[in-house]
Amino acid sequence: MRYLPLTPDDRDAMLAAIGAKSIDDLFVDVPQAARRDGFVDLPRVAGELEVERALSAMAGKNATAGTVPFFCGAGAYKHHVPATVDHVIQRSEFLTSYTPYQPEIAQGTLQYLYEFQTQVANLTGMEVANASLYDGSTAMAEGVLMATRVTRRNKAVISGGVHPHYVKATETVVHAVGVETEALTAAVDAEDAVIAAIDKNTACVVVQTPNVFGTATDVTKIAEAAHAAGALLIVVVTEAVSMGLLKSPGEMGADIVAAEGQSIGNALNFGGPYIGLFATREKLLRQTPGRYCGETVDADGRRGFVLTLSTREQHIRRDKATSNICTNSGLCCLAFSIHMSLLGETGLRQMALLNHEKAVATRDALAAIPGVEILTPRFFNEFAVKLPKNAADVVQTLADHHILAGVPYSRLAPEAGLDDVLLVAATETTLDADIKILAASLAKVLAA
Image 1: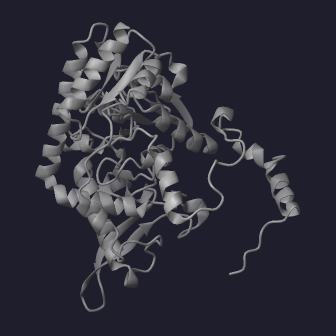
Image 2 (image 1 turned 60 degrees about the vertical axis):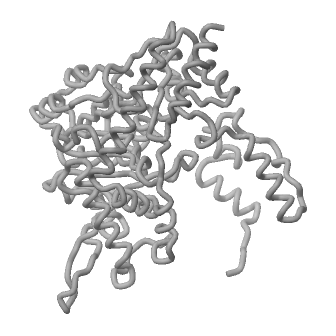
């Protein structure tokens, strides 16, 4: 294929068509402080060994999750991923960027999607699950759109415990088609406010458990209130491992589950790619976004797999499509499925128990520090603490000493005014020595 670069006239025509004056106008949402002027200081010409050494030295300046005490979560969690997962996903049968439109040549891909759907349905306690979406936040957005189609209403009530980034991603998507959202004030544990916000125009209620502050809540009463008002309940889960220990969303009356599956089989990956889990009730099957893989038999009666429901704009009339999402992060989906197969039901529960034990030990260590207040009343592997100092400043001071102490809530929602709140997460990868280092170092910083 010949390379045909754009001419300046081509670029001008494209910018004029979208109403931008220059290329820089396309990056106005990126803060000026985060932009780089000029080129990265790299050698223009060097041998492979020199380049490898130079880049390794640059990468060595980072404090990575695997090299320092690490207590960050807030939607992205560090878990142990067995080497088997990476080995299997790199087999040539799976390692492809292409999507499985042709069942006659993609039986392996279609079968693992079928297994994945079964695993997600069992994990969430729901009747059906699709072949995944882009990530947890866009899965929540698709859930809201689906609820408006089902109820023919136009308003979503969003709990103050939902991750602020999920809220913003959802509002970006649904406001574009005229759906109204009522996002409640950030709250560590105030699900009663959700019930009070439900009215006759509510299409869905969106709650998260464990929520962004780590609070684990039985949302059965919210489900009952939503259903009594003719609305659907969407349960968001950002830490999929929690479902190995806590009551499932399906058992609590969820109509739709939108979850992030990164915790199982996938690394932190600098924030992505991740894997969106989406499950619902069978009666709502045909309103689901994305696609389903189903089991069938061929003309000779042999077992096979096909895409059975693909209500996307590529497959049906655009105005009838239930989703425009074209990416399901297939390799992340496969990694999830392999890890789930390795764990099994017992292994997942043991992993979840270990997470909770590590979090309790971390909570106990921090609670003993003068000035530290534990805010989260009940949690799985993450909780919020109130510090006597600005949380972002404390985190930066500890990071300078190679300790990643957590995520300041102000980083997720600067406008919330919770500058002294720190989110702390522990997983099965947290060592007892890490907890001691965190507690001792935090005590010194707060006492200074």
